[in-house]
Every structure is written in structure tokens, then in C-alpha cells.
Length: 320
Image 1 (cartoon, rainbow, N blue to C red):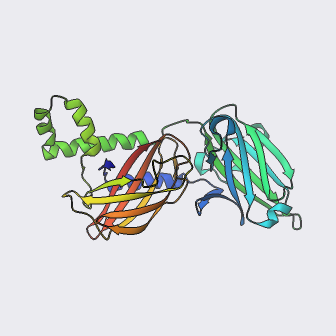
Image 2 (cartoon, rainbow, N blue to C red):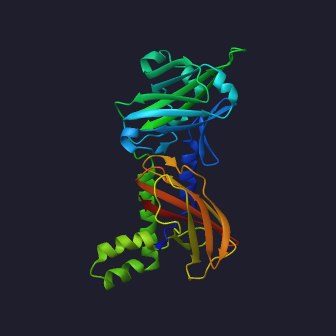
Image 3 (tube, one colour):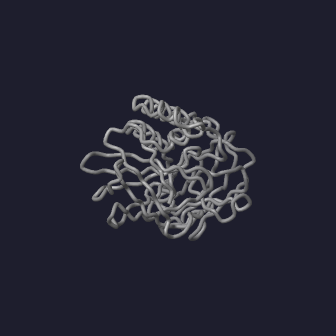
């Protein structure tokens, strides 16, 4: 069992999640644990493979490395199989980053100079796939266009994405702020002085305590532990967790509303699925289903626990 008791101030997480929501991509969304690209009202399952780098792993948009990449769309609307579809990848020259939209593309004066790949319009039944090998990491924008053969109307989707790791974003600032909050809590509670006098390994003990001690929160702190009855988490495999929730006094928390989100802060993207608590098992245990990780690295699972006393936020760090 992994014991985690890392709570943080609610307003900090509000800032974090507002950033994550603002960074949501344009044309690709998650529905029923699948990546779906919306070309206006037309939809297709969307996935990307990097066979040389990661084998059969699937990605929604962001890619871990500059390598051969296969973009695949499986149509949900039959009309897409009758439309000429073209696919373009450009370097992000809009200055908008993750906020780039179709109108920003229209404002590019010379789109050909920004284009790194272009597949001319072609009609493909059922599945549309293109292959492109990235030679450098960076920020890119994908553009999918489909033209109705009867009306001539053009439908398009834009999705910004990142190839490789190109920056930490705002997460180091938040991490530093959380450390300062912990230090303030230890100082005000007197624990810092007591630990210094009791331990000859103060540095190690203090570092561990920063991770495990409950800091200040608006609505009361909780301790969350978890087990994985399906075995250790593996990439691209759906599995469930059992969350065990107690308050600081060790009393099991029952009747709570538990919501789970998460992602990879170093890559600025969330979980590929939408896990949810499906059953309260009693004794402070809650069954969480729909967990899946699509790439190795550092993940943060954010558990929101709401009771009559308010809401507490717990962050579970996990490295795969």
C-alpha cells in the first residue's frame, strides 16, 4: 500500500486546473476513454503511434520524441468516407501556443513556409492514416480539412501539440509555493524545532516530512492511501484502484464525494481516461475505475474529497 498524505491549498489547485483547462487542445477531445477529433460536427476516433520509439503505445496528441509518427482517424460519421480529406502539420508560428484556433491559422500570411508536412486531399474509406517523421522537437499545429462533395463546404479541425519535452511551464512555481507553505506550517506548528532536536538525519527526515506531513487547507485534511487489486499499473492497460480515506485522527471517512483527475505536469497533459469512483465499499474504501496510463514518466493523481466539512485536495505522485 502506498501511503500519501500530500494536501495543498485549494486556491493553488484552482490555478493549476484553470491552466490545464485553458491549455485544452482544439480539435481533439476525450469521450468514453477514447480520443475523438471533431471536424465541425463530424467526428472520428483519433490516435497517434510512434512505432520506432514506443511500439504500440497510443497518444492523443502530444508525442514524447521526434520520430516516425503515424496519425490515424477512424470515422464515426460515414460521410467522412466520402469526403476528400487533407492533413497539414505546421510549426506553431501563431504565437498562441495551446490557444491556437482556426482563425489564427487563417491569419498566417505564408502557411507554406510554416508547413512541415502536407497530405493533399484524398478520399479514404473507413480509416484515414498519414505517416510523418519529425526531425526536431517543438510545438506544432495539426490541421485536418474535409470538403463536402455536394455542397463544397469546408470543415476543419485544428489541434496544437508538442513533440518532445520543451519546457516545465508553471509547475516549478507551484512546487516552490507548496514547499514554502509546508515550511510555514512546520514553523507555526513547532514541528520543525522538535524534529531538529530529535533526529541526527535532519535533512533526510525533513525532506520526507515535506512530502508526508499535512499542510494547511481550507476544509480539513485527509489521508489517502491506495491499492491496485489488478496488479501494478502497466502502460495502456485499464485497471482499478481502491482508495482508502481517513481524516488526520485516523477515522475512516465515509459518505464522501470523491473525484479524481491527474496528468503529467512535465508534459502539460492530463490522463487519457476519465477515472471515476463507482462504488463506496465501506470502511473508508472507494472503488476507482477507469485508470490508464499511456506513457512512462512522472504522473500526479489529484483526489478531491468532499464531505459535510468541506473539500480537501490530495495529490498522489506516481512514477511509471
